[in-house]
Image 1 (cartoon, protein in one colour):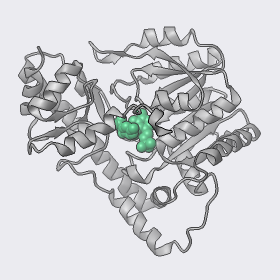
Image 2: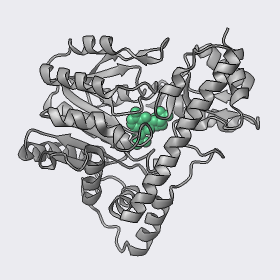
Image 3: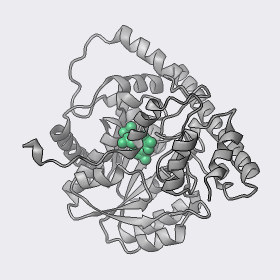
Length: 394
Ligand code: PLP
Ligand code: TYF
């Protein structure tokens, strides 16, 4: 029966991992998949996470099932991390999920159960997995304009104008911070205007927050989301610990619900967990348990926050230095936006052909839409890299 299958579409970002590995050049540069790397190119286990794992190894005396919602204490601390200490937790529920991806799917499944005809409005461009994940839950998707490639900024008026055409009950998928792939983010004033529109039109905010702490800081990165949460009756959130705890392969995330009341929140959570039961049953424990230990322990938490801040600062420094190198090599300010963007990514605004040339001729790997992972920039080779980029420009 398999002879009838056509090859499945591949994940172009993940495919870069294999291409990069197979390249024998020693001066190759990996700006592809979105994982944080230190100046030696290593994606280390964070200090606090390693310590938490040690403690778990010593103290964990059973691996029996935890249930569909996973680690309940993890869910509680994650909801606080995302919504902030002063949120109305009587109306908030969270379910541990396999990564931010699992959380996105759970939230989408809940939406499908409660509003089967809802359209999910997705930014153009967005993380490529958003589309199949929403469609996989049976939802319809539509796009709102988001990014102006020339200025490197958000097309905010166009975004609002399009969202005004959404029908009440539709959902709007928003990147909580550190927009992937553009690095262009909403200001807090813009979040306020989006919130007003959501309330006015009866739209459901669906916030994907996968890089909390990578942009302006742990609290600032959640400020937009918290502003929305303070004004709307209902909301969905998918959060990921992959990046900010560097637990990528352990698959740690949480799907969250803000409902009109505690009773409605409980019922909604029940449906989310019923969906989990049909997909994978229960989430993997280890990474979430480690994250929980870190967040519950004062010292480990402080150390985690300090290390995360070091990572954020490194990316900021790289942004500024790379924009300067590109300014020197191109004799223009066309790449200045890189220093203004926040998070792991920026889009250089190159064509696919130019991206291909950078890979084949210079061993520089980036996603086909010219998205770069800022953490992969070579600290001591920025001018050489900028020169390579300028050489393929026209
Ligand atoms: N959402 C966005 C925008 C992402 O870039 C990612 C990628 O890492 C995720 C969600 C989910 O990641 P994970 O499933 O690895 O936690
Ligand atoms: O955008 C990125 O590079 C990260 C990592 O299927 C990623 O979000 C990429 C593709 C994918 C899963 C994670």
